[in-house]
Image 1 (cartoon, chains in turn green, yellow):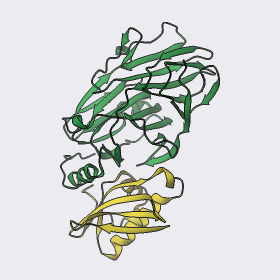
Image 2: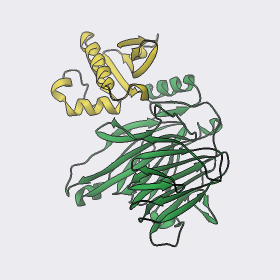
Image 3: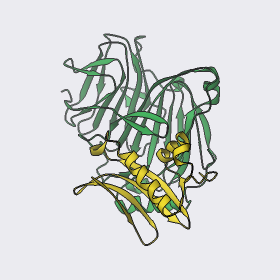
Image 4: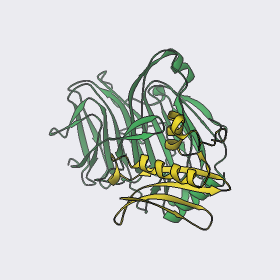
Length: 286
Length: 98
């Protein structure tokens, strides 16, 4: 039985620092599908060769995992714990912020020198209360490390985490089961995504347009929230498209998400704000 | 719609935008000595698209000027606005520390 479409949420422009992103979650019509708390799409932007440095100023995170799916271009991140790294096109970075850190992000120096298109989706993945204050860690998977879910050359979708039929994604520390598949499809190609009854199942159309369950057209920059009932969805590319498919066991705990923190109570948010004010998230120059 | 400032006894608090009983947005701040630190600005989905972040920014900057405070912009939004419009905010921007 197909999972039914419950919401189609349009990403709305939101300004974060100098960037304008599209936010489809949370949305005024639908708050959270915990563990999926926030979905931001930085739409494709063209950088001429020799562009000046550009960073999203250092900011704190606590209590969840910001996950970056790099669709185009190359990103560079660094944090107050001394970690830094490159995220290349087609790769995924799964950063567990845990008890907290400061980080900054933006296009890599090498990318800006060379120029090109830059586009990413960032997803905030919640974790159960008992893990929120654990030490931060990173997981990174390159495009080559993520198995393709189809042998069809017209379906270039890769499994970042969780399972798809017999395949397992390389990102394997998400505390609760999360399946994430992303990439592109050619026109008229169809993919079937099996999904568990009771799970949150989401599809974000980054670009192009798709037909869901042979019936409903969904255009780019829209997020589909499916019913918990049902065991599968099908996605057909109405035109060449890029997408992100997500499926996860719900975390049935209260969500207090504010600013850059995802906790369970407003008191814990206030504590995070106080800790940030007291400099407990460390220091990062840029 | 109005902007209200509420602070606790530790000089931490926020500017809030209220429409009746509904909170549409907030800017979290702290004041220590002559420094006002802006930590975070958030407009809730119900209030989006109405220029509320700018309204919070203006309220905060007015407050800083009135009380002769310098602003340390840890908030991404405030930092970006200060950087983009130094002519408008240069007088209150505590540079070099944020």
